[in-house]
Length: 244
Image 1: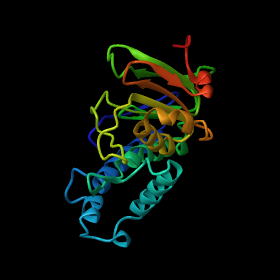
Image 2: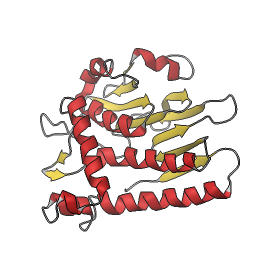
Image 3: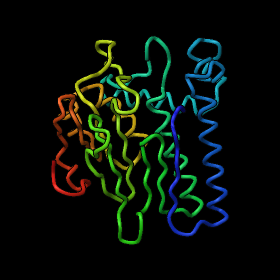
Image 4: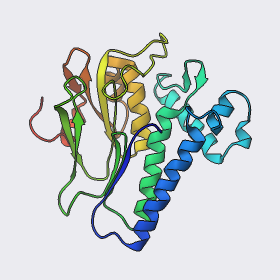
């Protein structure tokens, strides 16, 4: 998927967990082969060009496109799969794939772990007995600094912004890049949801601040293009240290 994935498993690593790690890696490679927009022979590329039909694709393709449609409805159209005139569900795929990889580990007995896909992270359990996970969020405008540190148990953390790939998120209203925010980090329970909604929120810009108050179970921290910050009221329970 053009990024780095990592696994952090706490506690004893049993043979079942070792097998699950192998299965999770295989799953991520499978997802890449099906959904990569950089591969001309992937199912999503062929579907976008009209060379195949949805019933001829793996069932996961229909599932992901249904999730994309739901995200588009929830966000009032700010989440979109029509990028530059081509089918591109990438903003949904990574979080969905990471969450499923995490479930493979959990089902094998690894109840305390993280799966990190390019900085979007599904956390299960806790880092150590009585100690929550702590996820540092790189400041998009000052790359040697952290913008904030997110703490919690059984949570998902997703960041959309310009730090890694520049201005790559499209404002569906204008067709140009979204530029009002430098980054926005969402915290919730499921990475499938928060990763997609983070993309929509970044496209919205400052309007996301009011919208996210209506999204149940999701909190946000944003850095604006002029280097100020805002956050939803419930984010304070996830933030380590003093308020910015």
